[in-house]
Image 1 (tube, rainbow, N blue to C red):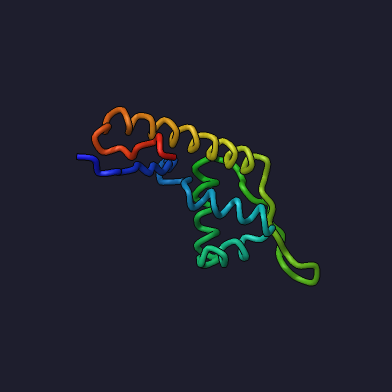
Image 2: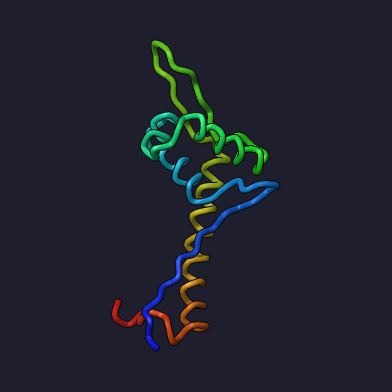
Length: 121
């Protein structure tokens, strides 16, 4: 009964509402790369207003600012991550890596009849 199934775990953090998950992490990583919430949202095919809504929900959940932003104009605007945002993003990535590793190990233990043969990797 070897089905070669795999497991895919995703981590979402909740306060009163969902405040952080893979999408927020991706959005913050893109802001860090392009220094603009608008450009990061465009890369994710997301409305700028939705990106702000997501950032505000995460800020409310964590109780801290995640972005320093400046408005556009002659010099242009932009956004950079706060130190808290960097810490959250780093911790989230670390946590996800560890959860994925443990989840794969547990999956092989609990579902040995379905788990993909890891020796062929």
